[in-house]
Image (tube, rainbow, N blue to C red; front, top):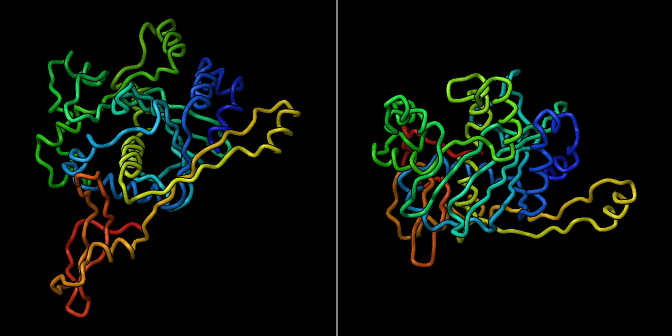
Amino acid sequence: MLADVIIEAAGGAEDKASFGAITALGAAIRRAGRFDLAPGVVASARTVKNSPVRSQLLALPLCRLPFAATWFEWPATDELYRSDEGSSPERPTPVRVGALVETDETRQRGTMTLAWAHRHQGVGMCLLSITFDWSAEPGEISDLERDFLGAQGRRIEDRCNDGDRRHPAFRTARDEDIIAHRMRTGVIWCPFMEDLGRAFETALGARPGPGTPPWEAAVADITGEPGTVRAVIMLLNSRNATISEYVPAPERLNVQRVKRRKAPLLDRTTVRIRLSRSEVARAASPGKREANRQHLVRGHFKLRRSGIYWWSDHERGDPALGVLAGQDYRIDP
């Protein structure tokens, strides 16, 4: 588990380079509810993240974090989990990725901090954290990028440019929906990196800000992950999407670890997808539906009085009648 690796990294080279940020993060993870995302969850979350932004905006106010502090982690090297942006020699794919989500009493407003571990490069943390407010009527949230734009006389709309349209969630979105989505998230200096920030101020006179190499590198490190974590939380709140199983820490192994002066391993909750794709397809295709050509139905939320339900991408129709091509979305493996 990445959580255990982070705790064991306290006092190491990466921790000293970050002025104790890894130690602080490990202490917060100990206090958090911990979730290990099993195969299929992150792939399904990617489908949720790519669903129309308007449906996500409608579903988010019904979502809550399970704990005031919640830790999510998942493997990243398997093809099933790979990042949308891929990897490169400069940005190799981590072995595991994790996110600590801390909220206020609403469980809808808070911060998200990303960390990861590489096979030969140890533990890493992002200089920046994500702020969010998913309530029906979001308030003002901290956002250093928005402050930077305001200082230049620019507006939030300037961040919502045509580049958004390349992402499946925004291809058919209205401008007001894109702006509403942007207003619910922000970027701040990581709360666990305050000592490192003060070191920057002492050495350089200021912390790195938007446009500087450290800032842009940090943004690149977390591109895609906050949306994935948000989608996982939406799946956890969907009444038909996931099933969880508590996994206690191995008692006998922990006794041996304590004897060797190692930190005991943590307990966790494993999260799995509840419905198979065939079950989703059957549930979404009533027997009396008029026959039509085979086509793909994009994943979407259904909002009901009893809660929110997620229906994954699935095939519908009779291939004997032909196949309807031309959709700009696909079913992930």
